[in-house]
Length: 417
Image 1 (tube, rainbow, N blue to C red):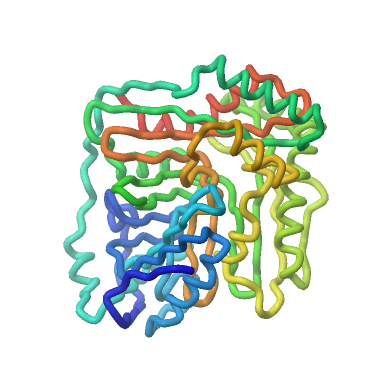
Image 2 (cartoon, rainbow, N blue to C red):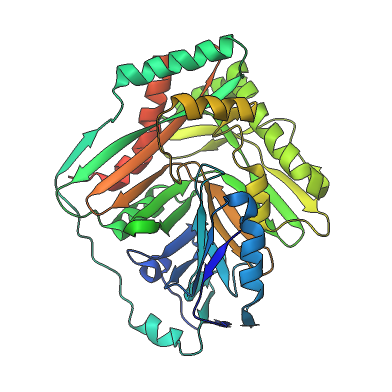
């Protein structure tokens, strides 16, 4: 069961632009931004909202019906052109989900060519674009940081998770924590996104409006699933080490990560989840025999690029994301037992943290990343999140330290006194 808020029959037009457009300028403080290495799109306004009370499992059909009802003239014909539905979906699969279709979208291909999609018979997108200007930074200059759960208490939670593993309830569970940053005036979302784009160019930088005026921001390194025609791919990550900035030290750390039985086993569980989720829909699936190192600014991960060919009649990118979420990278394994334990013990409303974040177009193409390295900003407050995979033998102090260096990704962009 879903509900749609729309003004009536909609008409979408997509045309190529003669000029280059900065996507962050289009998104502004409360629009949609999706950008990775200069490619992506930004959206403003709301043509229609799609609410899915039953959770993400039923979102694919609801979105497909809405997008299919929009009359479309698409001179561009690339993934993301035409009407798109976007959203930062909740971690909790059963929680109500909401997506929306922006009324103005500017996209940019890998070559730098831009297009414009407008929805609505009276909308002049070119006029709107001509009036846009980049918002000047308005940084706060005072911040207070706090951890809602004290360190000692959170480490005791990790101890309980290890005992549950020893008792055979599951072999891995991903435990999260949050840090609150409160500024002396409103946190300027475009400035945060601009810093994320500069600091983490290899990540997908996302700005997504949430209910109540909040904004979800992220620099996610992890592609949950992407679909382009009959091509599909996923790039799961699991296993993490900090980076030092010294090339020789970082190489030694990376070699240790690749050789770690604990990290390799944890990564293998995540890859297995992806293969099990995509396998039924694929005529072929390429799974590398060993992971590779994915090096980011502050950490390195083990990563495996899984790719395949979809069979006719396969779900859209959104449907595939719903089938995969949550993988062992953000929940645990076996999934049901790990999620049950988290619901009883974690004590954290994750919201969109670790949920699927992304977009799907009328062709079913789209991309969804895992909502990590992220925060939720509302006025002066930012909730920043990080999680760790707890397995047999995990050390609580080491897991706390891992959350701290993961949190640096967002702290570096938000907190600039």
